[in-house]
Length: 344
Image (tube, rainbow, N blue to C red):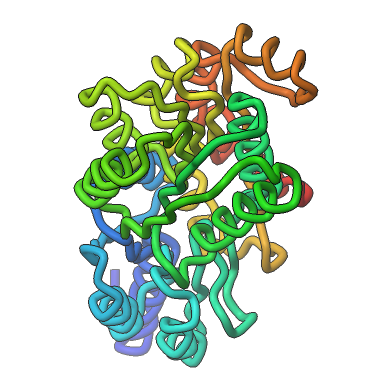
């Protein structure tokens, strides 16, 4: 069959257009994640579940740890901007300090999601939890466990981190306004380092022989502090946040009064799911909220209720199931609206 030159050229052009269209359709969105670090047990679990979400949602995820360094965190954000990724997720060490880097992403029209945080500038998305109200309940539970009197201390993450600051403010406010018999004798910024929380606990045990309770910004630093107290034979009551499985046995035996389940795996899957949906055109409000759960034992809940405090809760055994059910809760089959709940 004879095909003239025009026909050949037209066929070639059609093939090229079809090939380009196929390539565009098959382009895999790239998500850059800037983590505070990738060694802390919470972040390890978060990454593992995030990778599961990446497979489920058909996106590529590049993880970069910052080793607790603000300078490295800013550099990681800027590197992702220069690479032209589709979405950047960042867990801000300091929400004000990274604002300029976030603005560079804005200039390139790259959506930024502050994980569990807010960033100054009011442009990026924020995946949040009801931290102030949750930590207020944690503080009340610890104070009620101590019958409203005694010395307590608090382990936090780092100054300038929205989540850490919010949880610290809630703890301080409840103790100062509602429990005049409680004395907050120490607050230690651990920078998410278990060694620093262990050192702080050792110092407090020596300095405050009457220390009765410790509140914790996160389970990963709380478990280390509790190990020091136990090794010294000190019956300290703890109350914490995050829902790491290492803490659940202590919740069951009552030595940890209450925990709050975000769940590292739930957090990791949720954030990648949100980023993937944004990359594919989903529309969201600036602030998205994840549902959380108080975790305590039936015995402790009964004791607190008898002392005037009650709240909805799940037991540690139930929390273990909820923490692992993130794929059902946040799968690609769910509508975009399922990724956020009303502010709590």
